Image 1 (cartoon, rainbow, N blue to C red):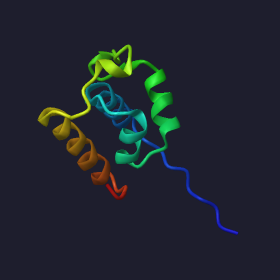
Image 2 (cartoon, helix red, strand yellow):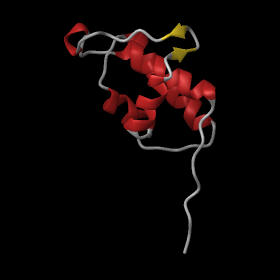
Image 3 (cartoon, rainbow, N blue to C red):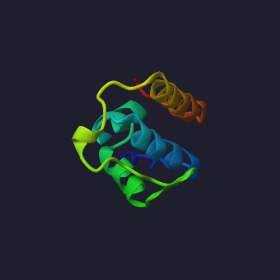
Length: 93
């Protein structure tokens, strides 16, 4: 019987993922899928309430965000992916 190795993520990656979620305006499940992690992990990290820039401020309602990511948000997603893949993790995006 084989056992799976539990993945670990750096605090930096967690902060980047939460910042991406907070700034993107996309659903948590979509951001988690793009990063190749479970939504529950991202939800837990968000629940810790801090990012590299300080406290996370998420929109109060889903209607308060735009559905189309800006160029800055798209670059943030790409940077997070590059950072993640550069650490030896692979995923399909």
